[in-house]
Length: 201
Image (cartoon, rainbow, N blue to C red):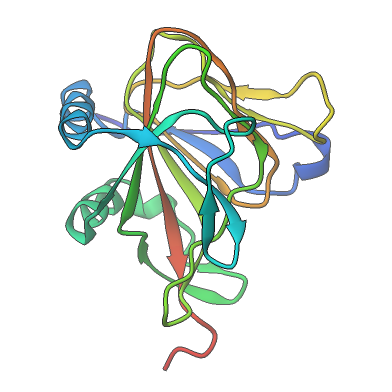
């Protein structure tokens, strides 16, 4: 498989930010295995970050399913596929690795994650995430795009339509949503690019 890259034409307010899609990163069989393994672990209602390391349930904002798998080994395998496309430095910090906290996401009809900015993940040693890595595991459903917006009240946005085996990479600080799924079932994985702490020795 040959990976191809396509930049996302972001809304005006965020046009200087990083956002692009990599196609044909994972095979259909690999994606099916991720889905099957995630279903064996089971899904629960996804929470939202409210700061200070706290998460809460708020179905007005997010009502989709999630399961979490902490695996440095699997994160390293994912990185092997996309390493040439991950920035070596960000805000003066060196790249460390992908976040081992793999969040498997599942959307059924009527489910969504309304407009938000992705939260950073910080380790005890100060290593911090700045870039979202979103892997799409299937396609063929209706709705369920990742959509970028200028503002919370904009009617139209820039849609990224999920394709099996593709990876969307973008800065945390871009307003976006997991648009409501209309038909079918959507699966994805989220992880993050981790950058070293300023005070790391």
